[in-house]
Length: 280
Image 1: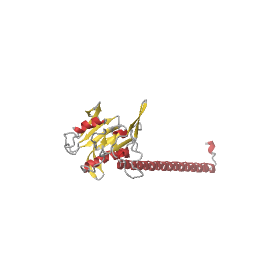
Image 2: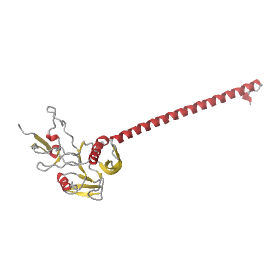
Image 3: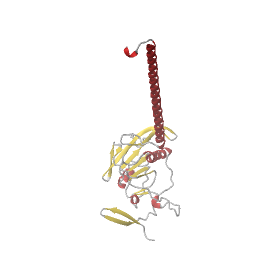
Image 4: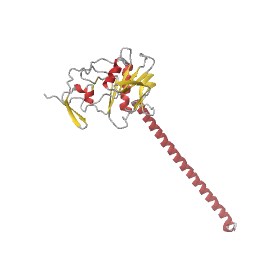
């Protein structure tokens, strides 16, 4: 069987290279998520983008993934970010083989050579001091070419800061206090509120350039209902105004008719008394 070829278009030439053998790579190990909060936080980050974000302003497509292996080099162990976002890429057109009903291995993880670029943004949610989020992982994500690296530490396991953000400079990361990421057209904020069945907690949320939360599906539906309610109230108010105007017009017409009747009665009385109204 001939080896599959990957085509790369790079001005001014087109390059074709053999697809690397990934049969030895582990794309899933069936290890469960470490805690419920992390799982909920991952879904909050991923689902919100698909339900409430239209994507970057330049219209590029995007993919977001939670707890999926990230391979950036063939003989380097995978990274498994809690969340990743990559712009300008699309998921596999046929993630499931229609003949075997299986998932081809190249579709099971984020392989940089398959997607053509590293993720633009990665988030790690700290559960304890053992994850190396500010140590080895920081260096690994820099080597992988990730643009932004966000560390959310909800229990302050690594220090007093709940949120630490690193941006790429050359081949390394530099910590920043900036929470808006212009290359991604997204920002982040710490938000206290309810999510699903949980009471108000502190969560990591996406925001737009004006600092407005990217809504969850529930929030978007609630906002839509509020808009419908407000529109209905406006229609009702407009109808009431029309009715009031019609009533005022009818009353004005009644008063005019009454004035005309009284005038005609007066003129009739004057004529009955032998007085010409025009001579007065």
